[in-house]
Image (cartoon, rainbow, N blue to C red; front, side, top):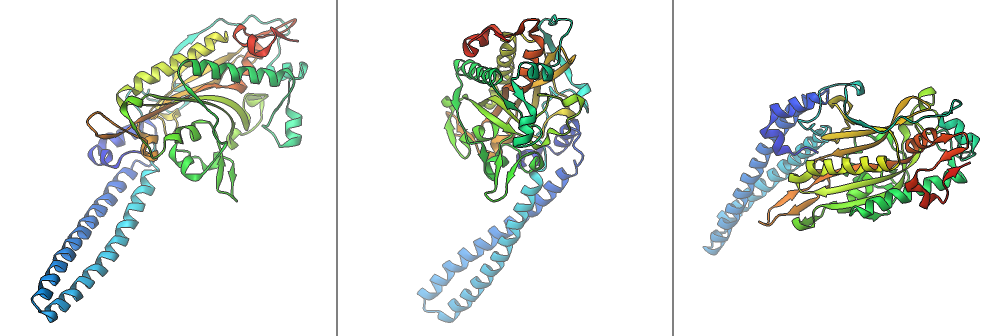
Length: 423
């Protein structure tokens, strides 16, 4: 959530940056400031009434001390009237504060000045492309045919048990999933991230804290009886670990990682472009999260991008890094880099990671703060990244490493998988 003081002091800048994100309702900025002006005036009235009550109360004591009971009783009546007026004003103040907050949470984060101008994914900037084009056999197959050939994922069984978009991994497919998860976690913890195993359901306050609410209600699975949401990513519960806490400056950066299944209702249709593992409702992902000093968040973003890039290099995958344009960014992000891997059999790029800096947008909602050496309390900055999302990584590994004699397992995964080839 944007800070109200910043909006008041930078009205035109806020509107300009929101336009970069193609946010349609920039007039919300004016409405927020106007409502806040009313709130401030109402607060002033309330403060003035409180002063009158205090002054009159002291006067009552003096009058009683002098034996002037009639004058004291008249002052008591006056105080009662002040208090009744104050109660009405306090109710108005509460309503105005609620209205301001309801509008504030509808504003997305402001994009960094590094964000490219653009409206659609076609206008994202290709920052880097690396890796060798795989040489496939003449009869190369897309991954949905390979997983059927080697009997490692069963989509029909997922439909039977749950519905479309819930694949069942089995045998060597389940083992490859476990190998990837273990490798990713070990890689992250070796880089100083503390591993967490969070709940897979969260309450409303937790979903609000990271910006899923009120922006993405329709994209999450909701348990109405308990008012819980299935997590769309480990970012949601793990970032909330430090909600409503003040840490010491020397405790920053705080680095966390977690593996969780992820649940997303918005998976959409299942046509040619989203076959197989390209898009599913439930998938596995390893996440990295950092809470950092505001002065170091963009340096940290570069470090996290390099961290994810090294993972893809170690897996031997061809990849590219995109800096997202304003129109393709998430509601909460100030700057995002997407990673895509090349699917050799499908001849297309598949997104496998997003690494984002949220600046103070999430931490303002969650009140995640730190106290500096001078004793001043400040909001930390939060960042997160997929390290990595498994379905499209698995799709690319299967397609790019297929041979006449089976699917070759990348060297870094062999200690975890226990074999060199799926055959």
